Image (tube, rainbow over all chains, first blue to last red; front, side, top):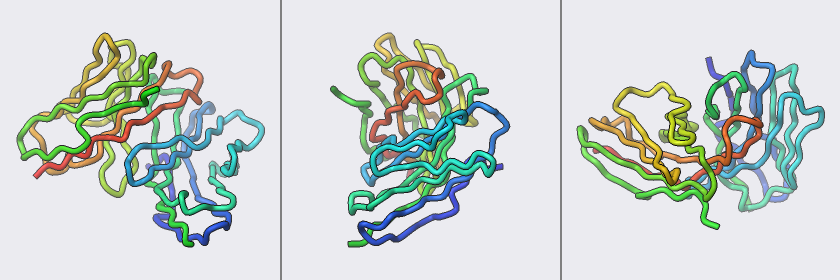
Length: 116
Length: 116
C-alpha cells in the first residue's frame, strides 16, 4: 500500500495565484513527521516545510503553509502568491518514529507549472 | 559553507558493469543516506550510514552496497548493472540521527546514472 499519495501528476497555475498541492498519507505510528520538498530541474531536493504529528498548529514558512488534517491523514501544501520560480516538482514525504533509521518515504510528486 | 557534494554528476555505464558513486556530507554531519529516484517517481531509500555503521537498508538487492569513511564521506556501489538501475542517485546528510523527527536532511544534486 502506498504510504504517501499525491493524486495530481501535474498542475498549471497562473502567476500570483495561490495553489494547493494534495497529499494523503498512511501510517499506524502515532508519532511521525511530514515534509514537503521542492525539486527543480537541477535535481537537488529542497526542504520547504515540516509538520509533526503532535503539532497543534499548521506549519507556515513564508509563502508556504501546510494544511494538516490529522483525522483525514491529509497534509496539503499551500503556496500563496505563486511565482515563476515555483515551477518544479513537489514531493510530500514522511518519516515514522517507529523506524530505526532516518528513512524518508516520498510520494510520486506533483509537477507544478506557473504560467506568466 | 559547502553543501552536500556528489560525484560524478553524470555517468553512462554498460549492463553488467560496476559503478561507484561518491558523496561528501556537510561538514559536521555524521549521517549519510542514499536514495534512488527513477524517472517519474519519488526517491526510494537505499541505505543510511551513521558514525560509519549501516543503520538502515531499503528493499534493494545485494548488488547494492555502501560504506562510510572516517571523514563521514560515503560511497554507493552497484554491481552487475541492469537497465533498470538507470536513475538519479541522491545523497542526503543530517547532523544527527532520528531525533527529533524534524531533523532536516540536506540533499545533494545527485548523480544521473544511465545504463545502456
